[in-house]
Image (cartoon, rainbow, N blue to C red; front, side):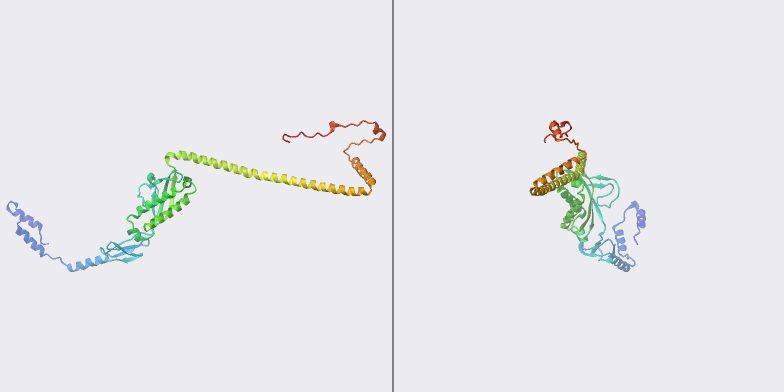
Length: 356
């Protein structure tokens, strides 16, 4: 370039008093600048155009989709691989990762990372304004949970909602509060966690679909659920009392299962014995009656002979009994004897019990 600043400075120094250059000097230098020509300008402009055209090439990764904007407005979706769009400022492209599982924390924050960053093992701090919730039985419980989600519609995700992650955070907190508010504290602390997670995920998905957020909720996982620190000791006492109640109930049911079968068996045995005794007595009475009727029939046919036979059979039975004491006396001796009843040798009847 013909503009020589060093030479100009020397000219200024050579003038008396160090006077600045005159207007004519500036005009001469301006004319020289106008006559300056850039060498090879015919090659530079086509090169710039080629570079501008080449800037439209882009590559979409396998876990991404290309979202092309034309003058800032959505135009089309491109798939994985090399693609082309009209260079900026006509068209531009965004490549969100649509298969990446993302995570949002509720009620706590892992130390050293934002809320929407990928998980890293470490210490966490509780966020009470998010975790404290009111249950349906008017108890307060601290609920810490995470939501895993992914992008299912890139167009809605990028253009329909101003801040999709913040929208998901509000939807998650609102859904969990509604589900917890419809249940009891025992459900949240014990066996109802799985049902709470399912209901929260379904409610979140309905909210996000109503907003056309383009997000899909993969899972809701409850991390730490406990009563507030101020009343946790009271809850421990209540839980201990419930465990004692359950233990007593189990012991009573075990005793019931042990004693009832025995009682039923004893009742069945007594009933069967009584039934057998009843049948024995009935059959014995029927047999005695039949025998008596048969003897009566023979007695009516020959009374003297039958009477004598009955007497002889009776005396035979008595005399043949080895345990019976026997004393044989004549008629004369019998008339002179005094009847004696050995009451002291008779078996005594047991005293009746009270109430009998």
